[in-house]
Length: 297
Length: 189
Image 1: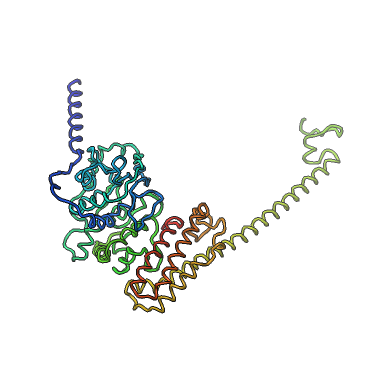
Image 2: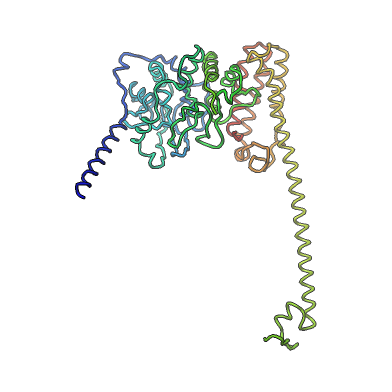
């Protein structure tokens, strides 16, 4: 009996150690960025494509032509808990002004905070992981040019067990994937569109259905999902349901006008405001990519 | 009391009060009760009828307001049609046609909308409407959005005839004004 218990204890310890090992945060190798500098002008375009402002501006702010203040504060109520976007302005005390380039790139591409804690995947590092490190470095350079905000970041309000950050290591193991979702060769425009959509604009974060643990169902890429933060449905934007021409898609991403001249509503209105700042070719590329996505219901 | 016995007329009888059988005067009570019930039923019936009539009258007025504002939105879409087609390159740019459509949008944006938004005509209470209660809870902001659209369409009307680039540039703020209002005040799909 005692032997059995002791064996059980050892097994439990082994399992815990294994779990601890499996869920360890993956740090960024700072040496990989040695000597590289970002270009803030390129960073402004990456910023527009990545849609940072859409989540990190203050709850009552809108996206305008002037430099956005990324004071954070918007909350997103999901079944896992309520997330609150942090202050990512260059403020040294309340924002990320005192973080090094490597630390910010690590957060964006690996979902690991400066202190080594996992970040919740509500922050779309699953997408940003596929971006070119040089683009992310340029994004960081651009972020540093923005106005500082002294609004303190609020913590999330998570439902147990999702409140245990270490558990995210398991989530990452299960659901983070290398490589493109729409794999294979695409024509040049669609290839550019794939990079913009899958690595920066993270369309799938809202448009791909998720399982009970919040992992994306990659076999139904962009096939639509219930609205994670409200009522209604996020539409299926694969060719199975989206029958607009590429020109109509590109124009929608620029103006918010559908082919019937209804307009984008909800969070998509913000996305359109960001994507409107990209060059026309980039929006056309996203449209070409959407035409190349496998039809899914 | 035992079965078969009747009450002496000098004593009140529980049976007599209800059925009016034991003593002479109890019959009057019975009739009074019937009259009371009849009167009450008539009053209630009249009240119910007027309520129903009043309610359906209210519903009609609301339905007309909803239909009118939705028609207004359709007119917006109708006039945006040629402008968007030109901006997308689906239609040859035509300065006169563009200027005309933009002037229509500008005129529409200037219409006084007070009659469009009667209380109780939001999506929760009225079939067919997608207006959120926020419209009435936050009327000042709602009116600001109307004003933003009026400014954007005024600018569009000013430059729509000045060439395709000018038209394209001015369409952006119009789309944003439409989206900004819908985002807050219209029910999503």
